[in-house]
Amino acid sequence: NAGVTQTPKFQVLKTGQSMTLQCAQDMNHNSMYWYRQDPGMGLRLIYYSASEGTTDKGEVPNGYNVSRLNKREFSLRLESAAPSQTSVYFCASSSPYPNYGYTFGSGTRLTVV
Amino acid sequence: AQSVTQLDSQVPVFEEAPVELRCNYSSSVSVYLFWYVQYPNQGLQLLLKYLSGSTLVKGINGFEAEFNKSQTSFHLRKPSVHISDTAEYFCAVIKNTGNQFYFGTGTSLTVIP
Image (cartoon, rainbow over all chains, first blue to last red; front, side, top):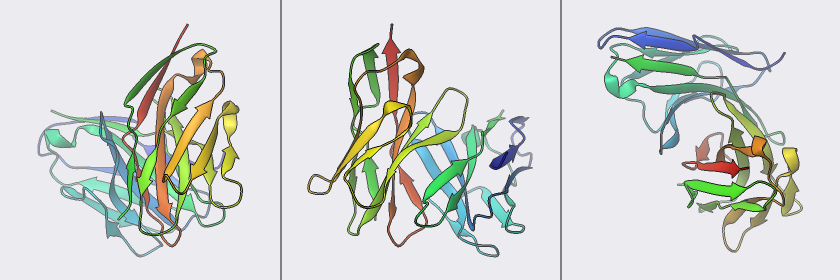
């Protein structure tokens, strides 16, 4: 089925460890996004990529890096995990006008201890 | 800059009763408006969207929303809720020239048997 695939679904890290969250979409969308979701704060944009080869900071980019590997894949890296990065992470891709709308992945639940 | 306000963080409602979830936005330019639903432990799914045309838009699962430009609102309604409507609901906007979505903090709808 067409959509956005995120891996892993769950992860526990120790403070200071690094990891990469993977995201791939098969809908030929140009734009891709990484959000984090925390209770009472909704979804906050970490980074986005409007097209292959470009990336831009969102609202909460500190502590994260991204790579738009190709049109399909957009990865999020935590170089040195901190407890404040405990969250649920969502990847999304979007179709352009007139079929605007995000397609979300199923999320990665990350706990940093 | 765009911002989205969902005034009600939690809305309890009895089964088969009507419900309205409120969303207000602020923007200096024209925007497109969306409602997403998130069921427990899942990603977000598109309920409905307003891009242009009729200000009353109908979505999936019997939901509808009305765009009111003068009041900068996009409230979500359903005339009779079901237990399965229990979920988190997010309002989102995007500039008509942009590619970045802005989300509200979410409204948790709980349907009581």
